[in-house]
Amino acid sequence: MTPAFRWRSRTTFAPFITARGRLPTMSSNRKGDRRERELVNRLDEAGFAVMRAPASGSATTRELPDVLAGNGEVFYAIEAKASSGRPIYLDGEEVEALIYFSQNFGAKARIAVRFDREDWYFFHPGDLYVTDGGNYRVKKETALAEGEDFESFTGGPTQTKLGDD
Image (cartoon, rainbow, N blue to C red; front, side, top):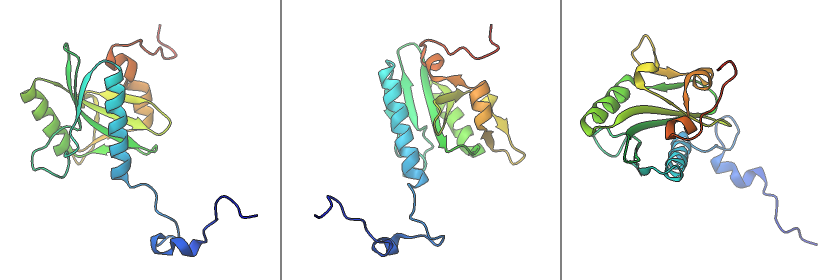
């Protein structure tokens, strides 16, 4: 009896194996795009009108935020970043461009971060840690302890953290 699927030998994938002897994982760009779409869908479900600017970062010389969102009362220009658990770094120029765009557009600048197996957390750029090189950093522990959770950000029920009375 022939199985419904056939195991492929490693030689089948030989052209794709990396120098470390592994099959490549999803590229960070594809993962970032997927996470941005996830954020757009969540904001849409929360009642925001949302637009993703997929050209941000490469296809244009203008610096655009990853996501624009508004609900008629508040408007956000959002730079979205995701990580498996390692600290997230943002280029200083990227954050300054977000602030510049937000001010001219009449939106509030926010940095949205998501770590694997965690929800989205939001920061005002001024609340982020600035490195000696002028870049910005968000650690997972910082996001969980100090970030604004998704429900609070969208005006939904807020998350109560231990120690909050």
